[in-house]
Image (cartoon, rainbow, N blue to C red; front, side, top):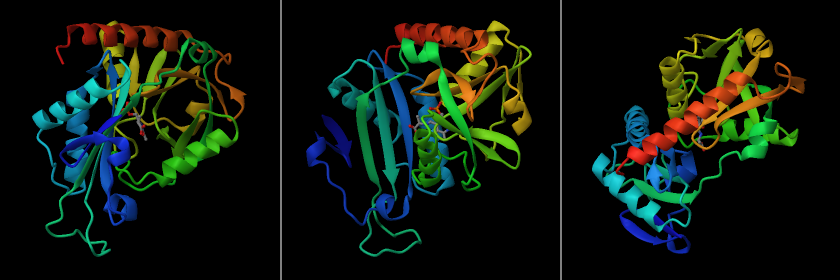
Length: 286
Ligand code: PDD
């Protein structure tokens, strides 16, 4: 498998970084996960724009221009083994000889791009839906940034896996924030509810696609704070992400959501999502 590391394309086994890399020592870096269908990246502009926002916020100059990112991603995708892939790109503040929290001076960033086969939920999982639990959101106050310091997300998702669930839904001050690795939507009385894109959650690329599709097809939706009680009284819950696409959550903390099966709105949105994705991919010259 070919990866990109600091200007070079090389086999994964030959890609080496320093143990003093600040990504390793401090979790000091940014990342993106980009879904690729039929070797074409989906919503690449939006992923690169979000990367830029994260880099700006953590004061790490973007090492590559967008055209360069596109070129690197195109080469990595071309070398990838599957038609559908999940591309990870990661930038850290590099490796200094000294371990000091403050920014190093004159140290180049570490830039890594890697691809893996895209594993989206199959028809069986889609028909069954997913189990979720709730956990307290123990993260910092910039959850809008896609940074690599993910230990709180890792702990939350492991808590879910420990009890046979797929996702942990995080609550902060009695409000829904998001999943450990996904955004969460609620359907109640025919209205789609989405938490606002503020510091409490990652502005998901899939989240935006879902709201665009709701607007386009006339599904009623509201973007507003969602209280824990509304989460628990939902007719439907969905999780969305670049790899899960739109997936119905059918139990929450062991209780059925609605009638305990994927609801009609989730099925409708997934149908719109896959039709839209396929149409964009057909028209894309990427
Ligand atoms: N996770 N919220 C969090 C905390 C996430 O980690 C993700 C994505 C999302 C959904 O964002 P998007 O629709 O842009 O994928 C929301 C990726 C897939 C990951 O870390 O693997």
